[in-house]
Image (cartoon, rainbow, N blue to C red):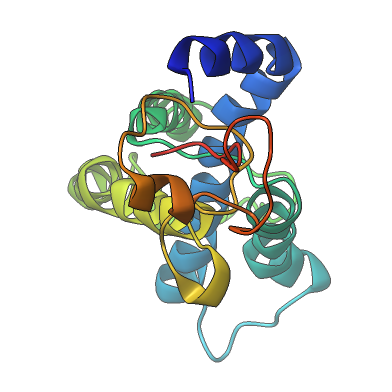
Length: 205
């Protein structure tokens, strides 16, 4: 096992598009999970009439993204991948503030009634009418909600065989693995000999 050879092999196998997917997937999955949870907790009411788009945007879409990233592609998620997510959320909150104080409105539900929240993207982020509530959820999203959703996405990315959170299914490994036990934990088949001593390629978080 030679870390230098493994690093060279990884650099050859991970191109720009692969690394771009590694950057975008954690943000996309965490954002979609956050939107799903917040919609059903803060927006949905029993008297609300659900549409296909409501369920698709706040549930089904997250499952599609998660299955593609964690089950089909085995995309690695590292803790440093949280920074693009935080940056995206800050950009979204900035747009949300601009949206609240302008006449952009919500073309899908605006009724020209100034007493309703239908001109806001989400009622809990109505900076024009309830700035303190909006500020609370803006801070909570960056400090608590988004990091928690990111951790859930990270946990799914490390899910291996037998519900083990050990990243044993990942296709690329970075860093040096010293012990025999660590090497065995990353083998697709411990009895199968490969050119790198049976070591599979999986990313270590």
